[in-house]
Structures are given as structure tokens and as C-alpha cells.
Amino acid sequence: MKIAMVSEHASPLATLGGVDAGGQNVHVAALAREIAEAGHEVTVYTRKDREDLPESVTFGPGVTVVHVPAGPAAEIPKDEILPWVPQFGKWLHDRWLFDRPDLVHSHFWMSGLAALEAADRLRIPVVHTFHALGSVKRRHQGPADTSPRDRIDAEAEIGRRVDAVIATCTDEVDELIRMRVPRRATRVVPCGVDVETFNPHVEPLERPERPRLLTVGRLVPRKGVDTTIRALQYLKDAELVIAGGPSSNELHRDPEVTRLRWLAAQAGVSDRVTFLGRVSREALPALMRSSTAVVSVPWYEPFGMVALEAMACGVPVVASAVGGQKETVVNGVTGILVPPRQPAVLARALRRLLDDRVRRTAFGIAGADRARARYRWSRIAGETLATYERVLSAHTLERNAS
Image (tube, rainbow, N blue to C red; front, side, top):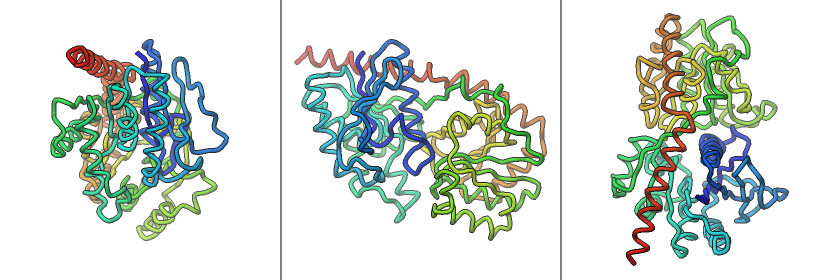
């Protein structure tokens, strides 16, 4: 198959750790590579956000990244990209007139709008992955939600117009049904993990003298890092390492880092909290292996890739019972699930884990086994390709009938 992936703000080439660069970038990159490995041709279309970017870049065998000129060739927050989506869609349409894909897989809601704009007139089937839903974001963030006003209605329309929706967890399917997206149009295919890179045989970065808790991810309030900082005041023997955000020499300019440092000072734990800044993907497994436990307690989480990567490394996980984490982390087997935004409850769960070496070891072994068995990218790509094939078969039947 010749597959077009549309990922308007999340390029597989992007440096991870910024406000808008995270799990979606990893997902698109890994999925594209694995599908190409299965013998298909993949082109990823993303917005050109730097003047010096070439139109196309070879990302790997069978995978090309194309930079679409839509809007200014500069980094802009994803919530400000919407005015340029029609231009993005028109460019795709003009491209596909002469370089037609068999199927389009769009990622994130604005990519869905652009993909449908381009593919509808050409009668190319579209599969869509939301990665996050505006209705969930608004429910949890309220007035702090910076998404465009029309996002929720647009997502409902996308869900009803595309040929299939690939959801990353059953919570997302339930939310889509409430948005009147037909259940028959959805398939659950979780995110995956690179079990060659993230595995329990990686040498730890170091062996800290005291219990080390680690959080990894974009530094935005909904990730719940403040909950972990507040929990630390009940864990007098532990330290907290925070990986993510801007580069280490830019941390002092980041408003969320400033807020978190102030909270750490108020809780009296500043001397036990370390901000690393952005950490490369290559360095992440060794950092995870040096921690006693990885903590991932966002307010909401469409999937929860960090928890899965920690499990693959054989590191016990304490995660909030939200979204995909409820399915990835098996409570009491690969880690512990806790309610979000409750520091005291989190502290109690961590205390039990830190005091029980045998339990930590058991969680680590079970987590690594589960990651390898259920979440390796080859399996995720196979399930995704099965969805593509069902859609293409239905599309062919429909075309022949007309």
C-alpha cells in the first residue's frame, strides 16, 4: 500500500520535550517506520515550521517526511495553526492529484480536517487517530483550555466523516460514542513501545544513594508534576528527578518550571527536586533504569506512553487511573494506579512501593513482559494495517457498487 500520514504539528523529525512535541511525534515516527518495514510506502506530511527545511526528507527505508508550506515557516503553538489548515488541505489535494495514496491516516483533529479537505474530492479513504479529544481537555482544564472554540464540534464531524477511527483506549471510544460517532466506525489500537531501545537490560545511568522517583514528559500543568512534588514532602528519604521541558540552560525562563520550583520551595523539598530539562530519547532508557519508580500522574491522559516505556525498562510504575493508563498499567501487577491530583494518596502508594523491594522487582518483571507481549510496535503496526485493509476492502466494494 501507498500510505499518506498527515500530522500537521507533530513531525517525526522534531526534538521531543517541548510544549507541543511529545507522544504523538513518537507514535507517528514509530508507526511509519514499522509499516514501511512491513513492505509499504509511507509519506508523512507535516507543517513546515522552519525556513531552512527542505520539502522532503528521507526518514528511513520506505518513509519520507514532506514539509507542507502552510502558514509562516516558524514554530507556532498548535492551538494557533487552525487558520492555516485550509491551505494545508489544498496543498495536499494538489499533491495527491498527481501522487495519489491508497489511504490517508490523519493524526490529531486539525490533520483530520486537512486530510478530509484533500481526500474527499479525490475519493481516497481516510483513517483517523485523535491522540487527544477536546471534550476531555475542556472538562479537565476549563477556562485554561486554549483550544480553538470549534474544536469539539470539528472532532465530532471528523469522527462521523472518516472511514474509521483508530482510538488508543476504550475510554476514548466511550467519549466518541457520546459525541455520536458510531461504535462500528471505531477500532482500539493502543500506542506501542520500542522494546529494543526500552528494555530491562539497559545499563542504568547511575545508581543513586537514595530512592529516586522520576517523572518524564512535557512540563504543562495537566501532567500533574505538582502532585508528585507535593507527595515528596511525605517521603523524606526520596528524591525526585524531573525530565522534560526546555533545554537545561533555558529552564530558568520557563514559566511552568518557575511555578514548580516555587511549589517545591513551599513544600520544603527543593533540595530533593532536580530539573534536568530536555532529555534525548537515546538517554531516556538509562535514566529510567536508574530510578526506583517512574511516576506518571496526569489529570487526564489519552494513552500514557511514559508509563509504558518505564514498564518496558522493567521499572515499577505509579500512574493515575485515567485514560489509557488504566489499560496499560495492570494495578498490583505491573504497577500501582492512584486517583489524579491527590498527593497524600500518591505518597502512601509510593511509600508502600519504596519499602518493598520484592514487590518492586515483581512489578518490573511483569511490566517488561507485558510491554513485549502486547505493545511492541510490530504488533501495533499489524493491527493498524488490518484496519487499513478493512477500510480499503469496504471502499472498493462501495466504489464498485456505485
